[in-house]
Amino acid sequence: MRFKRIFLIVIDSVGIGAMPDAAAYGDEGANTLGHIAEVSGGIELPTMAQLGLGHLGPFKGVPILNDVKGFYTKMAEKSVGKDTMTGHWELMGLYVDRPFKTFTDTGFPKSLLDAISKKTGRGIVGNIAASGTEIIEQYGEHHLETGDWIVYTSADSVLQIAAHEEKVGLAALYDACAYARKLTLADEYKLGRVIARPFVGTGKGAFSRTSNRRDYALKPFEKTVLDHLSAGGFDVHAFGKIRDIFDGEGITWSKKQPDNDAGMQHFTAHVKVDFTGLAFLNLVDFDALYGHRRDPAGYKKALETFDVQLSSLCAALKDDDLLMITADHGNDPTHHGTDHTREYVPLLVYGKQLSGGPLPMRQSFADVGATIADNFGVTAPVHGLTFLDLLR
Figure 1 (tube, helix red, strand yellow):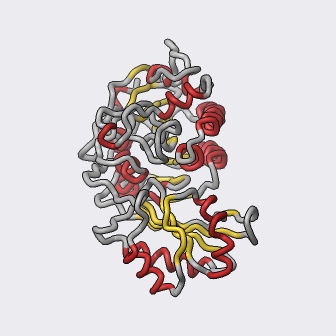
Figure 2: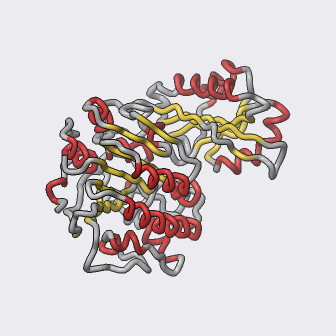
Figure 3: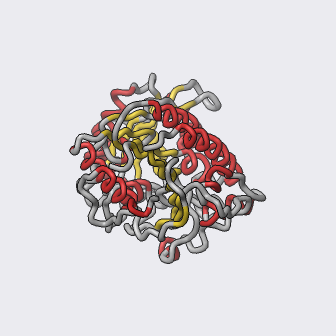
Protein backbone atom coordinates (compact mmCIF):
# COMPACT_ATOMS: atom_id res chain seq x y z
CA MET A 1 0.00 0.00 0.00
CA ARG A 2 1.89 3.03 -1.30
CA PHE A 3 -0.75 5.54 -0.26
CA LYS A 4 -2.77 5.27 2.92
CA ARG A 5 -5.53 7.46 1.53
CA ILE A 6 -6.71 8.39 -1.95
CA PHE A 7 -8.85 11.49 -2.45
CA LEU A 8 -10.84 11.40 -5.72
CA ILE A 9 -12.72 14.46 -7.02
CA VAL A 10 -15.10 14.36 -9.98
CA ILE A 11 -15.50 17.90 -11.34
CA ASP A 12 -18.82 17.00 -12.90
CA SER A 13 -19.06 17.60 -16.66
CA VAL A 14 -15.67 19.30 -17.16
CA GLY A 15 -14.79 17.76 -20.51
CA ILE A 16 -11.75 18.82 -22.51
CA GLY A 17 -12.60 18.06 -26.14
CA ALA A 18 -14.77 15.86 -28.33
CA MET A 19 -13.97 12.16 -28.53
CA PRO A 20 -13.56 10.53 -31.96
CA ASP A 21 -17.10 9.10 -31.77
CA ALA A 22 -18.68 12.39 -30.66
CA ALA A 23 -20.54 12.86 -33.95
CA ALA A 24 -22.58 9.73 -33.21
CA TYR A 25 -23.87 11.52 -30.12
CA GLY A 26 -24.46 14.84 -31.86
CA ASP A 27 -21.44 16.32 -30.09
CA GLU A 28 -18.89 16.93 -32.83
CA GLY A 29 -16.72 19.92 -31.94
CA ALA A 30 -17.69 20.03 -28.26
CA ASN A 31 -15.06 21.21 -25.78
CA THR A 32 -16.44 22.22 -22.40
CA LEU A 33 -13.36 23.74 -20.80
CA GLY A 34 -11.88 25.03 -24.05
CA HIS A 35 -15.01 26.89 -25.08
CA ILE A 36 -15.67 28.30 -21.59
CA ALA A 37 -12.17 29.78 -21.62
CA GLU A 38 -12.55 31.04 -25.17
CA VAL A 39 -15.90 32.82 -24.87
CA SER A 40 -15.04 34.35 -21.49
CA GLY A 41 -11.75 35.84 -22.66
CA GLY A 42 -9.64 33.41 -20.67
CA ILE A 43 -9.86 31.48 -17.42
CA GLU A 44 -7.50 31.58 -14.43
CA LEU A 45 -6.80 28.13 -12.98
CA PRO A 46 -3.28 28.45 -11.51
CA THR A 47 -3.54 25.45 -9.17
CA MET A 48 -4.66 23.06 -11.90
CA ALA A 49 -2.08 24.60 -14.23
CA GLN A 50 0.59 23.63 -11.70
CA LEU A 51 -0.78 20.08 -11.85
CA GLY A 52 -0.38 20.03 -15.63
CA LEU A 53 -3.79 21.08 -16.96
CA GLY A 54 -2.30 23.42 -19.56
CA HIS A 55 -0.74 20.47 -21.35
CA LEU A 56 -4.20 19.06 -22.07
CA GLY A 57 -5.46 22.20 -23.86
CA PRO A 58 -5.18 24.74 -25.28
CA PHE A 59 -7.38 26.52 -22.74
CA LYS A 60 -7.16 30.30 -23.03
CA GLY A 61 -5.60 31.72 -19.87
CA VAL A 62 -4.20 28.39 -18.62
CA PRO A 63 -0.42 28.34 -19.18
CA ILE A 64 1.60 25.32 -20.24
CA LEU A 65 4.13 24.99 -17.42
CA ASN A 66 7.34 23.02 -17.79
CA ASP A 67 7.87 22.45 -14.09
CA VAL A 68 4.61 20.85 -12.98
CA LYS A 69 3.75 19.37 -9.59
CA GLY A 70 1.29 16.75 -10.82
CA PHE A 71 0.83 13.99 -13.34
CA TYR A 72 -1.54 14.76 -16.19
CA THR A 73 -3.30 13.04 -19.07
CA LYS A 74 -6.73 12.72 -20.61
CA MET A 75 -9.10 9.76 -20.48
CA ALA A 76 -11.53 8.35 -23.03
CA GLU A 77 -14.86 6.87 -22.03
CA LYS A 78 -15.07 3.26 -23.12
CA SER A 79 -18.73 2.73 -22.20
CA VAL A 80 -21.67 3.59 -24.43
CA GLY A 81 -23.26 6.81 -23.23
CA LYS A 82 -22.45 10.17 -21.70
CA ASP A 83 -24.44 10.34 -18.50
CA THR A 84 -23.56 10.63 -14.83
CA MET A 85 -24.04 7.01 -13.85
CA THR A 86 -22.21 5.61 -16.85
CA GLY A 87 -19.19 7.84 -16.20
CA HIS A 88 -19.01 7.16 -12.47
CA TRP A 89 -19.62 3.44 -12.80
CA GLU A 90 -16.83 3.21 -15.37
CA LEU A 91 -14.48 5.11 -13.05
CA MET A 92 -15.02 2.30 -10.55
CA GLY A 93 -14.45 -0.46 -13.08
CA LEU A 94 -17.69 -1.19 -14.92
CA TYR A 95 -18.26 -1.21 -18.67
CA VAL A 96 -21.77 -0.09 -19.66
CA ASP A 97 -22.61 -1.46 -23.10
CA ARG A 98 -26.19 -0.14 -23.26
CA PRO A 99 -26.91 3.49 -22.43
CA PHE A 100 -29.55 4.27 -19.84
CA LYS A 101 -32.77 5.49 -21.40
CA THR A 102 -33.57 9.19 -21.47
CA PHE A 103 -36.87 10.95 -22.09
CA THR A 104 -35.47 14.42 -22.67
CA ASP A 105 -37.26 15.08 -25.95
CA THR A 106 -40.42 13.01 -25.55
CA GLY A 107 -41.40 13.11 -21.89
CA PHE A 108 -42.43 9.94 -20.09
CA PRO A 109 -45.00 7.56 -21.60
CA LYS A 110 -48.61 8.10 -20.57
CA SER A 111 -48.85 4.51 -19.33
CA LEU A 112 -46.10 5.15 -16.76
CA LEU A 113 -47.57 8.41 -15.52
CA ASP A 114 -51.07 6.92 -15.35
CA ALA A 115 -49.76 4.10 -13.16
CA ILE A 116 -48.11 6.57 -10.76
CA SER A 117 -51.24 8.72 -10.69
CA LYS A 118 -53.53 5.74 -10.03
CA LYS A 119 -51.32 4.41 -7.23
CA THR A 120 -50.98 7.77 -5.45
CA GLY A 121 -54.35 9.33 -6.20
CA ARG A 122 -52.77 12.50 -7.53
CA GLY A 123 -52.64 14.08 -10.95
CA ILE A 124 -49.43 14.95 -12.80
CA VAL A 125 -48.28 18.17 -14.46
CA GLY A 126 -45.10 19.00 -16.33
CA ASN A 127 -43.60 15.91 -17.94
CA ILE A 128 -40.94 17.89 -19.75
CA ALA A 129 -37.17 18.34 -19.60
CA ALA A 130 -36.63 21.34 -17.39
CA SER A 131 -34.60 23.06 -14.71
CA GLY A 132 -35.90 22.02 -11.32
CA THR A 133 -36.15 25.57 -10.00
CA GLU A 134 -37.88 26.82 -13.14
CA ILE A 135 -40.50 24.08 -13.31
CA ILE A 136 -41.35 24.55 -9.62
CA GLU A 137 -41.76 28.25 -10.30
CA GLN A 138 -44.00 27.41 -13.26
CA TYR A 139 -46.23 24.82 -11.60
CA GLY A 140 -45.76 25.49 -7.87
CA GLU A 141 -48.96 27.46 -7.36
CA HIS A 142 -50.95 24.90 -9.34
CA HIS A 143 -49.45 22.19 -7.13
CA LEU A 144 -50.48 24.05 -3.97
CA GLU A 145 -54.06 24.26 -5.26
CA THR A 146 -54.41 20.69 -6.56
CA GLY A 147 -51.71 18.52 -5.00
CA ASP A 148 -50.69 17.29 -8.45
CA TRP A 149 -47.16 15.90 -8.72
CA ILE A 150 -44.70 18.03 -10.71
CA VAL A 151 -42.86 15.53 -12.91
CA TYR A 152 -39.87 16.42 -15.05
CA THR A 153 -36.65 15.04 -16.48
CA SER A 154 -33.31 16.33 -17.78
CA ALA A 155 -30.56 15.25 -20.13
CA ASP A 156 -29.78 12.47 -17.67
CA SER A 157 -31.65 9.20 -17.35
CA VAL A 158 -33.81 10.47 -14.52
CA LEU A 159 -37.43 10.93 -13.46
CA GLN A 160 -37.88 13.71 -10.91
CA ILE A 161 -40.98 14.30 -8.82
CA ALA A 162 -41.36 17.61 -7.01
CA ALA A 163 -43.81 18.22 -4.19
CA HIS A 164 -44.37 20.73 -1.39
CA GLU A 165 -43.13 19.47 1.97
CA GLU A 166 -46.16 20.86 3.84
CA LYS A 167 -48.88 20.46 1.21
CA VAL A 168 -48.03 16.83 0.38
CA GLY A 169 -45.44 15.78 2.96
CA LEU A 170 -42.13 13.99 2.61
CA ALA A 171 -43.52 10.53 3.36
CA ALA A 172 -46.01 10.70 0.49
CA LEU A 173 -43.36 12.06 -1.88
CA TYR A 174 -40.88 9.34 -0.95
CA ASP A 175 -43.53 6.64 -1.33
CA ALA A 176 -44.42 7.92 -4.80
CA CYS A 177 -40.78 7.94 -5.86
CA ALA A 178 -40.19 4.45 -4.48
CA TYR A 179 -43.16 3.21 -6.51
CA ALA A 180 -41.89 5.01 -9.63
CA ARG A 181 -38.49 3.41 -9.09
CA LYS A 182 -40.12 -0.04 -9.00
CA LEU A 183 -41.98 0.63 -12.25
CA THR A 184 -38.95 2.01 -14.06
CA LEU A 185 -36.83 -1.07 -13.48
CA ALA A 186 -38.59 -2.55 -16.51
CA ASP A 187 -36.51 -2.68 -19.71
CA GLU A 188 -38.95 -0.41 -21.54
CA TYR A 189 -37.99 2.42 -19.15
CA LYS A 190 -34.65 1.40 -17.56
CA LEU A 191 -34.04 4.73 -15.86
CA GLY A 192 -30.85 5.42 -13.98
CA ARG A 193 -32.50 7.34 -11.15
CA VAL A 194 -35.77 8.54 -9.69
CA ILE A 195 -35.34 11.65 -7.54
CA ALA A 196 -37.65 13.14 -4.92
CA ARG A 197 -37.47 16.95 -5.09
CA PRO A 198 -39.22 18.54 -2.08
CA PHE A 199 -39.71 22.29 -1.91
CA VAL A 200 -41.29 24.93 0.30
CA GLY A 201 -42.76 28.39 -0.22
CA THR A 202 -46.07 30.18 -0.61
CA GLY A 203 -46.05 31.36 -4.21
CA LYS A 204 -44.09 32.47 -7.24
CA GLY A 205 -40.80 34.04 -6.32
CA ALA A 206 -40.88 32.41 -2.89
CA PHE A 207 -40.46 28.73 -3.75
CA SER A 208 -37.18 27.02 -2.86
CA ARG A 209 -36.01 23.43 -2.89
CA THR A 210 -34.96 21.87 0.41
CA SER A 211 -32.12 19.57 1.40
CA ASN A 212 -34.51 16.61 1.81
CA ARG A 213 -33.88 15.36 -1.72
CA ARG A 214 -33.77 11.58 -1.99
CA ASP A 215 -32.40 9.53 -4.90
CA TYR A 216 -33.58 6.08 -5.91
CA ALA A 217 -30.85 4.71 -8.17
CA LEU A 218 -30.18 1.47 -9.96
CA LYS A 219 -27.69 -0.73 -8.21
CA PRO A 220 -24.50 -1.39 -10.21
CA PHE A 221 -24.89 -4.61 -12.19
CA GLU A 222 -21.54 -5.96 -10.96
CA LYS A 223 -19.23 -5.41 -8.03
CA THR A 224 -17.22 -2.20 -8.30
CA VAL A 225 -13.91 -1.17 -6.79
CA LEU A 226 -15.95 0.39 -3.97
CA ASP A 227 -17.34 -3.04 -3.07
CA HIS A 228 -13.90 -4.63 -3.16
CA LEU A 229 -12.44 -1.89 -0.97
CA SER A 230 -15.12 -2.14 1.71
CA ALA A 231 -15.04 -5.96 1.61
CA GLY A 232 -11.28 -5.75 2.13
CA GLY A 233 -11.73 -3.71 5.30
CA PHE A 234 -10.92 -0.31 3.79
CA ASP A 235 -12.91 2.87 4.25
CA VAL A 236 -15.00 4.27 1.39
CA HIS A 237 -16.17 7.79 2.28
CA ALA A 238 -18.63 9.35 -0.16
CA PHE A 239 -19.37 13.08 -0.52
CA GLY A 240 -22.10 14.72 -2.57
CA LYS A 241 -24.17 12.44 -4.77
CA ILE A 242 -21.65 9.57 -4.86
CA ARG A 243 -23.74 7.46 -2.48
CA ASP A 244 -26.80 7.96 -4.67
CA ILE A 245 -24.97 7.12 -7.90
CA PHE A 246 -23.87 3.76 -6.49
CA ASP A 247 -27.08 3.24 -4.48
CA GLY A 248 -24.96 2.91 -1.36
CA GLU A 249 -23.12 -0.18 -2.64
CA GLY A 250 -19.60 -0.36 -1.20
CA ILE A 251 -19.99 2.91 0.73
CA THR A 252 -18.96 2.79 4.39
CA TRP A 253 -19.73 6.44 5.26
CA SER A 254 -21.34 9.32 3.40
CA LYS A 255 -22.11 13.02 3.69
CA LYS A 256 -24.45 14.97 1.42
CA GLN A 257 -23.42 18.39 0.16
CA PRO A 258 -25.69 21.36 -0.63
CA ASP A 259 -23.28 22.84 -3.19
CA ASN A 260 -19.72 22.85 -4.52
CA ASP A 261 -18.39 25.19 -1.84
CA ALA A 262 -19.62 23.01 1.01
CA GLY A 263 -18.30 19.94 -0.79
CA MET A 264 -14.79 21.33 -1.01
CA GLN A 265 -14.88 22.66 2.55
CA HIS A 266 -15.94 19.29 3.96
CA PHE A 267 -13.58 17.35 1.71
CA THR A 268 -10.61 19.49 2.75
CA ALA A 269 -11.56 19.19 6.42
CA HIS A 270 -11.72 15.42 5.95
CA VAL A 271 -7.94 15.36 5.51
CA LYS A 272 -7.78 15.65 9.30
CA VAL A 273 -9.88 12.48 9.73
CA ASP A 274 -7.95 9.29 10.36
CA PHE A 275 -9.06 6.70 7.81
CA THR A 276 -7.49 4.23 5.40
CA GLY A 277 -9.00 3.96 1.95
CA LEU A 278 -10.87 6.19 -0.48
CA ALA A 279 -12.60 9.57 -0.11
CA PHE A 280 -14.77 10.22 -3.17
CA LEU A 281 -16.37 13.59 -3.99
CA ASN A 282 -18.66 14.73 -6.81
CA LEU A 283 -19.04 18.47 -7.46
CA VAL A 284 -22.35 18.64 -9.32
CA ASP A 285 -22.83 22.41 -9.62
CA PHE A 286 -20.62 22.63 -12.72
CA ASP A 287 -23.07 20.38 -14.53
CA ALA A 288 -26.42 21.20 -12.95
CA LEU A 289 -26.13 24.97 -12.52
CA TYR A 290 -23.95 25.98 -15.46
CA GLY A 291 -23.61 23.24 -18.09
CA HIS A 292 -27.29 22.35 -18.47
CA ARG A 293 -28.28 25.99 -18.14
CA ARG A 294 -25.78 27.01 -20.81
CA ASP A 295 -24.04 29.57 -18.61
CA PRO A 296 -20.34 29.75 -19.55
CA ALA A 297 -19.74 32.84 -17.39
CA GLY A 298 -21.11 31.11 -14.29
CA TYR A 299 -19.21 27.95 -15.17
CA LYS A 300 -15.96 29.92 -15.45
CA LYS A 301 -16.48 31.59 -12.08
CA ALA A 302 -17.27 28.25 -10.41
CA LEU A 303 -14.13 26.67 -11.85
CA GLU A 304 -11.95 29.55 -10.67
CA THR A 305 -13.45 29.28 -7.18
CA PHE A 306 -12.77 25.54 -7.17
CA ASP A 307 -9.17 26.16 -8.21
CA VAL A 308 -8.60 28.38 -5.16
CA GLN A 309 -10.15 25.75 -2.90
CA LEU A 310 -8.05 23.06 -4.55
CA SER A 311 -4.90 24.90 -3.53
CA SER A 312 -5.96 24.63 0.12
CA LEU A 313 -6.71 20.93 -0.27
CA CYS A 314 -3.31 20.22 -1.83
CA ALA A 315 -1.56 22.05 0.99
CA ALA A 316 -3.47 20.08 3.63
CA LEU A 317 -2.68 16.61 2.21
CA LYS A 318 -0.28 14.37 4.08
CA ASP A 319 2.84 12.86 2.58
CA ASP A 320 1.20 9.45 2.10
CA ASP A 321 -1.99 10.82 0.49
CA LEU A 322 -2.82 10.76 -3.23
CA LEU A 323 -5.20 13.15 -4.97
CA MET A 324 -6.92 12.46 -8.31
CA ILE A 325 -9.10 14.96 -10.18
CA THR A 326 -11.19 13.96 -13.19
CA ALA A 327 -14.68 14.27 -14.71
CA ASP A 328 -17.50 11.97 -15.79
CA HIS A 329 -18.50 13.48 -19.17
CA GLY A 330 -18.69 16.88 -20.82
CA ASN A 331 -21.42 19.53 -20.85
CA ASP A 332 -20.28 22.26 -23.20
CA PRO A 333 -22.34 25.38 -22.35
CA THR A 334 -21.70 26.78 -25.84
CA HIS A 335 -23.01 23.64 -27.57
CA HIS A 336 -26.51 23.21 -28.98
CA GLY A 337 -29.26 21.90 -26.72
CA THR A 338 -28.83 21.29 -23.01
CA ASP A 339 -27.46 17.75 -23.08
CA HIS A 340 -24.17 16.30 -21.86
CA THR A 341 -21.43 16.09 -24.45
CA ARG A 342 -19.26 13.10 -25.41
CA GLU A 343 -15.77 14.32 -24.52
CA TYR A 344 -12.41 13.29 -23.18
CA VAL A 345 -11.97 14.16 -19.51
CA PRO A 346 -8.86 15.40 -17.68
CA LEU A 347 -6.94 13.33 -15.17
CA LEU A 348 -4.70 15.22 -12.76
CA VAL A 349 -2.82 13.28 -10.06
CA TYR A 350 -0.94 14.85 -7.15
CA GLY A 351 1.06 13.64 -4.18
CA LYS A 352 3.53 15.62 -2.10
CA GLN A 353 6.27 13.03 -2.64
CA LEU A 354 5.70 12.68 -6.40
CA SER A 355 7.65 14.41 -9.15
CA GLY A 356 4.88 14.95 -11.72
CA GLY A 357 4.84 14.80 -15.50
CA PRO A 358 2.85 13.30 -18.38
CA LEU A 359 1.03 9.98 -18.23
CA PRO A 360 0.02 7.94 -21.28
CA MET A 361 -3.52 8.64 -22.44
CA ARG A 362 -6.00 6.35 -20.72
CA GLN A 363 -8.37 4.34 -22.91
CA SER A 364 -10.96 3.89 -20.15
CA PHE A 365 -12.12 5.76 -17.07
CA ALA A 366 -11.74 2.38 -15.34
CA ASP A 367 -7.99 2.98 -15.14
CA VAL A 368 -8.75 5.18 -12.11
CA GLY A 369 -10.48 2.31 -10.35
CA ALA A 370 -7.74 -0.11 -11.37
CA THR A 371 -5.09 2.16 -9.85
CA ILE A 372 -7.03 2.53 -6.61
CA ALA A 373 -7.50 -1.26 -6.43
CA ASP A 374 -3.80 -1.80 -7.12
CA ASN A 375 -2.79 0.57 -4.34
CA PHE A 376 -4.92 -1.20 -1.73
CA GLY A 377 -4.34 -4.72 -3.00
CA VAL A 378 -7.99 -5.56 -3.70
CA THR A 379 -9.63 -7.15 -6.74
CA ALA A 380 -8.96 -5.06 -9.83
CA PRO A 381 -11.61 -4.27 -12.48
CA VAL A 382 -11.48 -6.25 -15.72
CA HIS A 383 -11.73 -3.15 -17.89
CA GLY A 384 -9.06 -0.93 -16.32
CA LEU A 385 -5.26 -0.72 -16.37
CA THR A 386 -3.39 0.55 -13.35
CA PHE A 387 -0.92 3.40 -13.66
CA LEU A 388 0.27 3.17 -10.04
CA ASP A 389 3.84 2.19 -11.00
CA LEU A 390 4.12 5.32 -13.18
CA LEU A 391 3.62 7.63 -10.19
CA ARG A 392 7.17 8.38 -9.06
